[in-house]
Picture 1: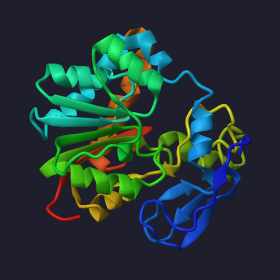
Picture 2: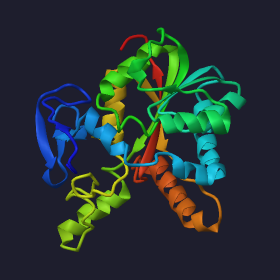
Picture 3: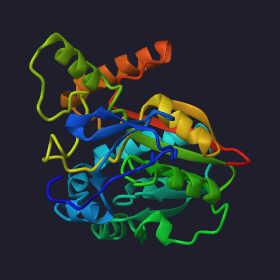
Picture 4: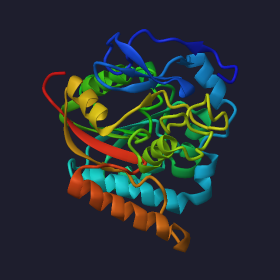
Length: 297
């Protein structure tokens, strides 16, 4: 896989079950029979992932459109405020700290973890936000340290999703809120059209596997490594197994919507939102879930 060091999994990273089946051999994707989660196998190991991301100037492109990125963060904050008032918030994978800066201005007490040293530098210099550089597991937070924990497009990258959610459950106060945004790679309209085109014999993009999902195997130009591929159903199941009740699961409007050039995307998103509300069918490329911590995991 692009010369990266790899590991082969014998168990599902989302539930630990051992009954794994090939889901898309062209993209190195397997599916857990027990919980339905699709994941890369084999996949880059920790050293391989670090080597992969060392090739990119992560987050530099965010600096090119801070007003547009602020719009995205404010939309996500509005979702959070539907279920939680200002309190102690931890952002995992905090990027350049812009979200935490806005949360602080809305009355939250902020903390953040970010793997990228460059991201931490941007956060400090641009927004005066001091992030903890490293992985969540590197820091010994006391139990019940936070009222809200956010993972915006992080869970698909972590090697152990159930372990990450178990840690979040421990760190949240009773009744605390977990907010997760992830790609909707399997059920998005793009992937569905790809699968339909293959069935009908039409030419398909070589950047995707036969099931319509991108991976490093068939698209070496990707600038991200997604280890797990969630659907509405598998995300809900993951929350339930780790002691969370889902309060909201909907479309994550993850891209800036400024200027006339974004009008087609805005209209498309509104149509997909209406379709999701009326039918439950989620065809947008990204989704966001808010879940309440229950008493026991």
